[in-house]
Length: 428
Image 1: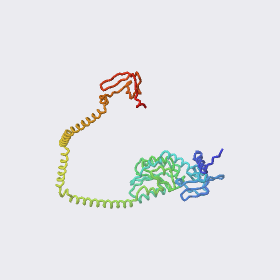
Image 2: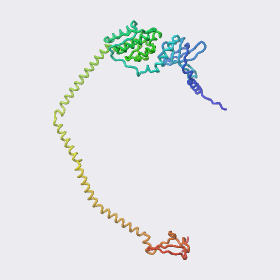
Image 3: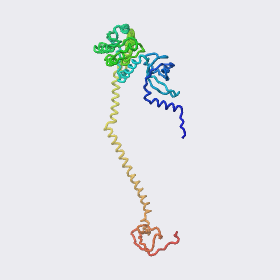
Image 4: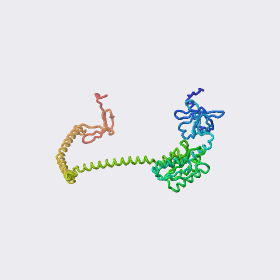
C-alpha cells in the first residue's frame, strides 16, 4: 500500500479544524501567572500563561482590551477566559484570551461578567433603547452621595456653564450594603416626581468593591426602566460598570457628565450672536433681492404695456380658431367626400381598361390551351387505346385475346385483339 503524503499546511489546517471543533476547548477559564509579556505596536498583547508545572503561549488582541480593568504586566496573577486554537503558520497551538482580570478580584469580576452577559442577552444594552438627551434641559437630577466630591464637581461645573439650570440632588448611598437599594429608590423617586429632564447617576473613583453598587442588577433595571434619560458617571475613565452599559449615555467621570449635560452659556451666547448676524445678513439679502424684483416687475412689459397681453391673447385665440376649423367634423367630411369622388371617377375610368386587358389575356391563354387539347388532336383521326383503364403506350403491352377500348373524339370502341404485328424498326 502506497503511503499518502500531505503538506505541512494541510496537517496544521487539519489540527486547527479538530481543535476549533472541540467544544471542550472553546470556553476555558484559567488561573495563571503572566510571563514573557510583550505589547505589540498595534496593541496586541503576547505573553505566556504558566503555573508551577506547565505553561502555554497566549495572545490577547487589541479589540478585546477595551474591558480590561487593570494593566497586565510581568508576574501578574490573572484569571482569563478564552479558547485554544492553532496558529497555522508556525504549527503552534496557543490560548486566545477574550477576557482577563486580576486574581484576587476574580469572584467579583466573574459576577460582573455573568450579569453583563445575562442583561446583554435580554437586550438591555441595545442601542435601540437608548434615548437622546434633551439639548437644553431646564432641570437636572443628580443621584449620588450628597457629601462626596462628585456632587460638588457636578454642581460647580453646571453652574459655571449654564447657571440658569435647576439642579435637584437625590441623595443616595453609593457604597456598602445598602447602596444598591438606595440607588434604585432614588431613580424610581425621580421618575415618580417627573421634575427632571435628565438624570446623572454616579460617584467618584474607587476600587471594584467601592463601585460594586453600580454593578447590581436592581440598579441596572431601575436605569433601564427610567422614563427620564440617564447619564451614567461612575468612577474614572477606565472604570466600566453595568450602569454604564444600560444607561442612555456613559460619561467617563462625573465632571465629564456635567460638561455633557449642558452647553456652555458663553458658547450659546456666541452662537446666538452668530445666528443673529446670519439672520440679519439673510434678511438684508432677501430685502435687496425683493427690491430688485419689484424694480424688474415695474419695468416689465406687463405693467408698461398691459394691452399687449390682451392683443397677444387675441392672436393666440384667432390662431387656435383657424386650427379648430381645419379639424372641424364638417370640414373633414367635405374633404373626405371630395377624395371619394376623385377615387370614384378614377375607378370608372380605369376599371374597363383593366377588364379589357384581362379579357385579352384570357383569350390568348384559351387559344394556347386549345392547341394542346387532346380532343382537338383526336378530331384529326387519332385515338387512345386503354387496357384495364390504363393507357397502352406500345404493342409490347398487349397480348392476343386482350380486351381493349379505343377512345375517339366522339366515343369509345370495345375490341378484342386478334393478332399483333410489331414494327421491327421500333423494337428495342
